[in-house]
Length: 616
Image (cartoon, rainbow, N blue to C red; front, side):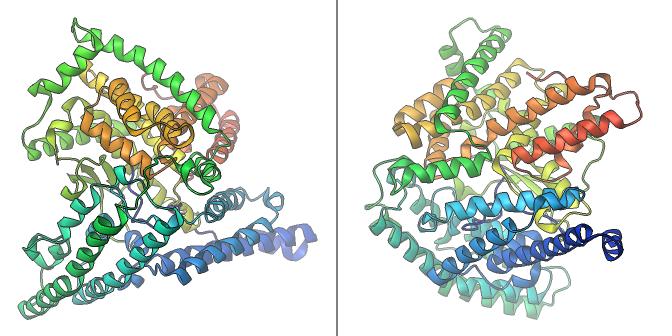
């Protein structure tokens, strides 16, 4: 899972690019027909819109700007007042109308412009559709909200100078205002029926406790004051540490204490008993909008459910075959019990797990030149997840070359008995390389694109790519042990089960227990992790659908390109074609790969590089 840079209410994209109008087009337009002049005018309007939109995003969501390495807004938090939310929704509607008014056909000769227009239209129109529903009234859950996002924001904030600390202090002082705004939104949700299911968010008060420690040095907000930059004077350190202690004591702790009390005494007792998005006011239409946004397809819930069932049946056969390769003689149920109980499959120390992941990472790095014609430069690291997240899924946190910050795979070391060794190879390939880190780092380094496209985020593309990346492991020398292959298949099964469970809960009335048992028994994962996963699907309808649907599309495009190009097919060039436009809606991705196939046919023939292992 790639972690969106913090919860940005109403922001579903991650990024995009910057485009300058071609001097050649301008020159031609000056002497040629009105058609060329119109195209130049449209290109100029697009450039202005792209820049306007991206600056608006960073201004409205200052936490997001910090993640990107834009330090202009490091002293503030997003305004979550009703007026600010209404203003953002109005801007998106107006921007959508302006984008629709631009003739995409007139950009036919300017491919980058046309693709960028398609990407921004998809982002904005999906959000306008979702803005018809008051989703901002559900801002706090066990997987997101200020109690989780603030810790990640701190990790991404620069602390190089006294001014950086002063900006951070202003943010801490502003926290009570933002938390009161979020509490007011939650209360509006409670009175209007837009409230999360109680069973899925019962961990939230315990998570907030991380911000209420009696020992202030154990609160995440203190971390910047525990280690100052080299060269800062002792007097400055003393002053800033004292100011930090006051801000945490007077602002941070009371604000989180108030939020916890509200969640415990008011929100949870009044939360929904029903689970599915379809049970919300106008919920069926809401879930349809989420499916469209998260998958960038026109598939219905029923169609997705059927795809999931077919994938579960297919992967189950591979899991059974792999089980037999281990030499185990019992039933699949007995094999799963053996995997869960045998201590050989589990670390007993967090530092040993981290070392194991780092070893996998270095082996994966060495295989990348075989799979890509060009690679990104930004490095990545491996570090433990925040303890307050508990059994939440492992994830990747993006880096930023502009901010001088590496990307990080965040390993779950919170409960080692729920994280078996045989899953580690496939998890690392998904979250780091060739998965999330490689794709997002490459996008950030692309030249000639509007900035918003460098950071675009579409679940079906981004998570689909990372799941596809797992399938490359066998050709990279991984999964040689049958237990690791079983772990790889188990994780693919999790993604197939998501199609069944997400639609089951949100469209077809599944209860929580049915979903947990279905995931646990089919994927062979333990009860605690299955529970955390299902609760994640409950509070984030539709998000779980993008992984498998995106992966299936990418595999279909690879098969299409292989068949069309024959011996001309070059896997390294194909992989760069997949990632060198940044994240795209799946229909746009298919259009781009079709264009790449045509271009490859026209290239002078050269000996292709060796292919990785065939896809399953």
